Image (cartoon, rainbow, N blue to C red):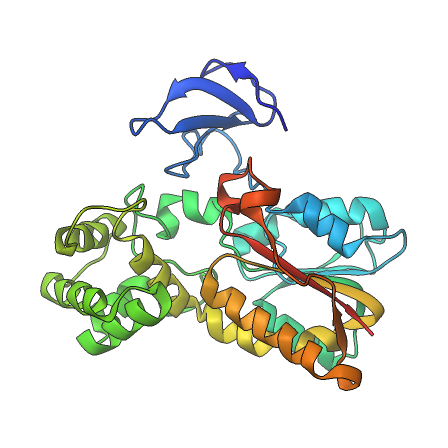
Length: 339
């Protein structure tokens, strides 16, 4: 995919490179009418324009799933429909397809697909999988994209990111009671250290230091406040990322029970597939990918008793196969087919 130079403020084509540099010398991109910083990951004109989510590993996903005309499709994390629209363009089977997301705003962006016959489910992917499997539903194509969507990160009021100060929220489903602020302000120092260590993959010493700093600074109600606490507690030089990055990931995972959901949903995937049906799972960090990899490995080791045949001996990684999408850098796609 090539880029063309476009001045800020002009009406560029999708994926055009601007001639303006970020403060940290990273290149900015304009996605349609939105200015996007590949380092900060924020949209500069979010109030004037609708959010744009660039689907990760789109071409690789289509190549792995091989959608055919008439096939049914289940997207367990439909988001803003980036993958779904491309798949449905090829299957043209809207009425036989189901799109799931627990984010209310994401669901509201899928109305055009619902009008064409697709079923929308406003719930988390585990609840949807349990519901659909209980109904005996099976699909020719299933996709599970575990990433946090761009608009979730970019809307400051969602509280997922510290690049723009916002409330400590981080809920993927705003009907949920637990918020990041509640977790940060009520959990014990030991619990916080465990969360930061286990889900943020910080060393135990670093996790304990950050947890202690949080306890000393409570109450914390803004993303900027938490980021500053972690930055102040950081020891040594910065590496490639802000010191608070892994702690924010850890808290987000804990608030949304992300790993628990991934682990619990994996056994449902074979049940949701027709014979010859294909499933793709896109993960974004080692904790998620480890769960997916282990499940696929168990299927492979089961031999004749396995339900799935693995299509990707090694994961398809975004750093290699989706180099122009900054949020694909850590993505990994694994795929399998129902025997």
